Amino acid sequence: MATKYEMHVYTMGTRAYAEEVCAAIDPGGKIFGNRILSRDESGSLTQKSLQRLFPCDQSMVVIIDDRADVWEWSPNLVKVIPYDFFVGIGDINSAFLPKLEPLAPVVSPPPPILADPAAADAVTSEAGEVAPEGEGEGDEEDDDDDDDDEELEDLIPSSDALAQSEEDERLAELKKNEILSRNTEALEAQVEERPLAKKQEELQETAAGEAEAASAGQPAASAVPVANGNGEVSAAQQPHKRERPVRKALLKNDDTELMRVRKILETVHERFYEAWEKHKPEDERRKRKHSKRSEPQVDYDVRTIIPRIRTQTLEGCHILFSSVIPLDTRPEATEIWKTAHAFGAKCYTELTPRVTHVVAAKRGTQKVDAARRRGGIKIVWLAWFTDSVALWQRQDETPYLLDPEPRPDAGVSGDGDDAQLASPPSDPHQISSDPEPDADDWDELGEGSAGGGRTRALALESAGAGAGAGDGDAGGERGRG
Image (cartoon, rainbow, N blue to C red; front, side, top):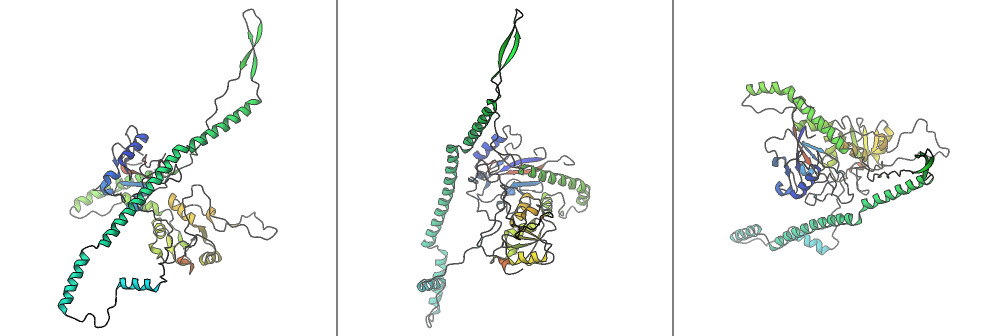
């Protein structure tokens, strides 16, 4: 990718951390050079901005990150799946970032009901007291003076407000230190316990035992006739050569995320320069004819190319969510609804003839039953949606069906019991997450490039301490260990 993109690193880690990672994966500095922007120079600990790198034009910039919220859902973003090498540690550089919002929101608990009448009276008096009759009838000048005093009191922060602000800052600092301490302890435990090294030693011991068992049935030596100088033939013992044990692989190299990202980057690059070559003469004529007018948006812009590729993922899918969106939430404002539209799907709040998919988090809802009775609708687990979105590719619905379709050769069992219903797919790399089981649901109630140009790309981090795809672990398009 370095031949087609100019690689940059934008990390929420420190500059020393980013330089160490880049030195490990790019020792010659041929890929990233000195193009590193860390939190020491970013200007913000919670948000990332393309303006810090490219203040004039972002039409050729592709962002690669596993967090879309820190980029405010920029159209330049290609969101990727983080790679966790040390599972359970998480992102060591995410302590400063805002909490990641889940795709399926969780219902917030209702406000507590005050059982004590005195407490209720106290709350009422804080909200605003009702003055008795006659009190307030007095001199207008006194009222004006009182109003002026109240305005001054409002302008000057009270000691209670200052104390509360200091307390909030102290709690935030304690929480940040707790996260950093927990990550440090987890890393120290990894070094002390050496889990990967111990597993590797166990594998090698098993391999050595298998090799000894295999060689036990073979003769230790073989007789080979040798002629001496007197013409006599003697038998010489030739020992067998012991083969070196093959080092068994401990980790499975089955992660294909980088290949998927490479394919997307190549597609963006190809379409960008195809559009550039196609519109270049037309743009030149337009510039001469309308030199004083603002140029309209053209096709050779990654901010239009990337969304166009993304919408092809679920294009033609008409989705009805069931047991996914909480009851007290406006569906159009939820993250999952916006994500579905961003990937080309159309969403509905009721079962209509246009619905093609019912995405459910559990069985037995009214919408699931109604869709089953109507027929011709794919009723799938929420994992189908989240996996399709994460991979930018519509997944086959068959493994995700709530009720798997019966095979043509499958007969009815003798006891007449129905076939066992399917469960959500248990993929070891499953990236989807179901909502809280007790969360109420709002929908329960109703139904190459021509010209050889180079495009800029940001090599951004995804979560994972030592993960290679963690925030700060930059490598290629995305740092992966």
